Length: 254
Image 1 (spheres, rainbow, N blue to C red):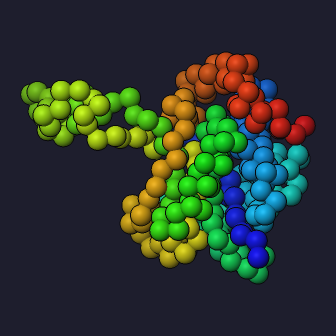
Image 2: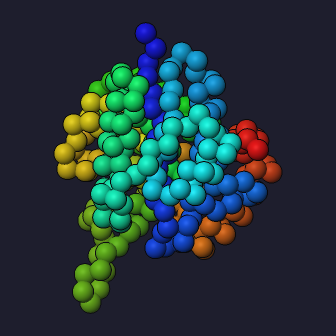
C-alpha cells in the first residue's frame, strides 16, 4: 500500500505587514505558483507516494489564482474561526488534515506544509525534509531551518537594564565551541499524522522534532514590502546562476 502524503498550502486574505502578499507576483510569476511547483516536482519524483495537495484559504482571489493553473489542488474554504493573527497555524493544519481525510475516506501518513511566502526553496529541500521524516519514525515533526549566523552562547546579547549581557553565559572563546543553533525559517513542515491530529495546545514544541537544513537565504520570508524587494533581488540572482532554484521556477505552469 502506498504511503499517503497531504501537502497543505495555507494563506489568509490580506496581511497587516504587507497587504495581499499571497497574491503578489514574484520574479514574473504568482508567488503561490513557486510553492505549487515545488509540490508538483516532489509528487512527480515519487510515484510510490500517493500525494494530495490542498489549499486552505479565506481568499477567493487566491483560490481562483490557484485553480487557473493547478485545478487538481483541492480548495478548502477557511472558516472565520480560523481567521485572524492570533489563531495558531497548527489549527489550520489540523483543519486541512481532518477535512481532507473526510473527503478521501482514508488517513494520511504525513502532512507537509509548504509556506507561500518562502518561495526560495529547491526540490532537494522538499526531498530532504520528507526523507528525514520517513527515515525517522520516532520524530513527530521535521521542519526546515538555516544555519544561524549568530549564537546565543557566543555572540548574542540581551538587554539587562543599564547594560547588556550574554544571552546564555558561557566560557566559549570561539563560535565553533558552542552548540550548533539554527534559525527556524517556516518554509517546510513535515508532520507525523497522529502527532498533528492529537495536538491540543497549538504548539509545535510538545513533540520530538528533527530539522532539515536549507541554504541560508531561506531564512527570509515575505512579510513586508522590503522583504519582497530583497527576496526578488536574491531570487533573480539564484534563478540566473543556480540550476536547482531555476528548476522550480521553470516548472511553473502558465
